[in-house]
Image (cartoon, rainbow over all chains, first blue to last red; front, side, top):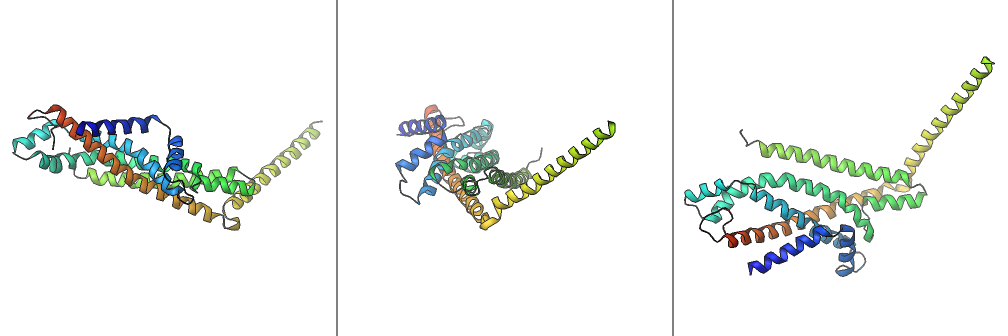
Length: 172
Length: 91
């Protein structure tokens, strides 16, 4: 049972990581959410599935980054492996996982520019639309670039504050 | 001769300056057209909203799927070892 699930998960991660998002979003949009006015759900599904593959690797790496000795220390105290996982491994792993997860979120914001391909009016699509209305393509594109820059810089700053608060309990 | 040259340079300079000034004014007009004219900024706002909605829900879905896959991998690793000790033991 677990073997089959593991094979499925491996297949999912392999397929998602080996195909371009641009193609995936067309497939999702034409496979599941084919109705008009549903494009945004298609985009959410596509990017969710896409980032799931990367997040799984981040989480796996985060759990594996915790030293084996921590597990053994828990065992020597007579704790069950569930308790060890919940109260020793995961709190430390989360510290490694969260910053990487924030980076994933930032990457995702930039990646959503692809959603314009299925006619979702995101920032890039809005800029293209305005460019086609004013017959002057370049200014809207620069404005869109500025908007992305502001969003990402703001998020980076937020993440840095968050990271500092997580590091506050470190003492080495 | 030299007087002529300097005059030429001067006119050229003025022309160039006018060109730059025109370009800047033109640029301001272009950006105004691209952002404020006819309430176009609402399109950008809609775009920002959609971008943020998509990335927020996508990240939630992504974390959900990622945790699921990571848990399966973790269990699989524990089943593989099947020893009485080791970090990757089944929970």
